Amino acid sequence: MSNEITRRGFVRSTAAVSATLALRGRVLGANDRINTAVIGLGTRGSWLLQGSLHRANEKNDVAVVALCDVYQARLSRAAKKAPDAKTYSHHRELLDRKDIDAVMIATPDHWHAPISLMALEGGRDVYCEKPMTHTLEEAATVVAKVREKQRVMQVGVQALSWERWRKVREVVQAGTLGKVVSVQGTYSRNDPKGDWNWPIDAGAGPDAAGDNHIDWKQWLGAAPRRPFDADRFFRFRKYWDYSGGIATDLHYHIVAPFHLALENQHPARVAGMGGMWVYHDGREVPDTFLTAADYPGKYSMLVQSSQVNEIGPLMLLRGTHATMHLGDEWEGPQGRNTNIARVVPETPFRDDFRKQWGKDELVIENVGNEGDQKHIDNFFDCVRSRQQPNCPADLGHKVMTTIDLSVRSYRENKIFLVDPATGRIVKS
Image (cartoon, rainbow, N blue to C red; front, side):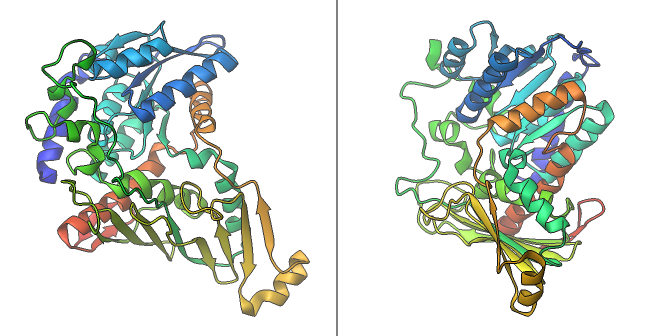
């Protein structure tokens, strides 16, 4: 599917309904609960629902009032957890409601931008799972809508609400590393059965009744029409029409924190490479992938991931004076997913480092994985305070430029040069 076809379909799918949506959000009083809808109730949507219900139970300032999914079985399971919520099989019907303040989106990637735009146009605040969108052009459209409507948008990169990256940013800004010249990271795993080969529910499909029914046409949206394919529905990350593969699912989790720790900029140059070296199960996306980018802040970024080998490159921030060593924050071999970070001086600066700190290296504790809840809570806090969340739309947009261009580089066998001021491609 060409990018042009994708963009045309994307514009049609959002413009067709914008006129029916409420023009502004409900004004929350001090004691009002944030009426929340969750759209997409697979694995990630279930986590968002759980996090929202936890917030409701802990602070009583959130109410889950609506749930939506095209697969009736998922909708039924979610409704048991939130029995007071009304259920919908079509997000347009849900978004016609005037009483919804916040929308949480956990659909396949190709629906992130259309639903985000519909929600924003209607005056709703949005929490959207990463990636922010399917393409960088969509991301630019969404961030413009966030600014126009003065909405809160949180992109679902949970690590940006952890102490880990706040502490890394403090070290960088204090100049302890000197000038940071390169960073590298990984999110790797090894699944002999084939990563993303999630279970397929027997009997589920568009011709089935009851909980087995799937609205396949609605699920496809602006993607190319094709007969129902259970593998595409249940394992969508394997296919380009609905996902960017490793880049959008895994690399986004690494690139976004680096943007927070260093500078949130569009890249200047991007390349992507890799291949389908092991999995030959009909998938389209590679099982091993590398994103490389140069930034106008004069540093380079390298992110490498594999689904067939769990040992990726060490997480490092390399500076002229010292290097920061971080453990793997997600998956990886035992012994590398640690709760500490180390700052080790470069050889020419060891004496100065020892004089300043009184030790040969710094050890920073409590920089491990803190889960999802803090990021969800940060979103709801910002819905009420109207402050910027920890992973706002502008950061999500700039990360999307690097992510999407790495995918295009791999697929088109090109290196992309970018205008950092606009995020637009200037040469490939």
